[in-house]
Amino acid sequence: MPVAPRTMDTRRMILDTAQRIMARKGYSAVGINEVLAAAGVPKGSFYHYFASKDAFGEAILKSYFADYLTDMDGVLARSGQSSAERLMAYWQQWRETQSIENCQGKCLAVKLGAEVADLSESMRLALKEGTSAIVDRIERTISSGLEDGSLSVDGEARDAAQALYDMWLGASIIAKIHRSPAPLDTVTATTRRLLHL
Image 1: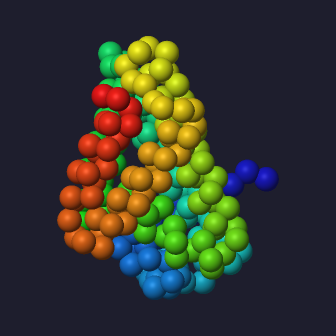
Image 2 (image 1 turned 180 degrees about the vertical axis):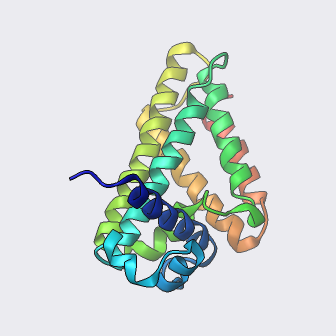
């Protein structure tokens, strides 16, 4: 039976609201009632949309990655740029969205990654699926760059893609710890070196 549009809109509103709040506070510190109040949804209706808080967390992550991957695909599909330029535009966008004050919904993988991986297997798997999809796109862009000659890497494209993603994720966490964008500047320079730009 198809879900009515109003139900989908309400569900989406709950997920979007949860993403914004959890990007600031984390997963464990946020109660369901806080999210529902901020979304303007009656408290009793939560279980109409989600079977449990775990299912809710999994839905938040899947929704986040769906939006993130759509944005990423847009950056990586820009016309008139080499593969290297498109990939560096992606990293630049990452850097801009990881600023200390501006991390509102754009960095949920950074914020929740370590926290929920040990709390919920379904959320860990949603994180794994989402981050693997990001690395897949980086790998494809590196492979395209090898073909168009705009970049080169030592070793396999997949290994380079995974290393770059891991570095950027780590730098984002360190930027939060130090409350400084310096780690993101460092990883930008390292990315250029690894891609021989």
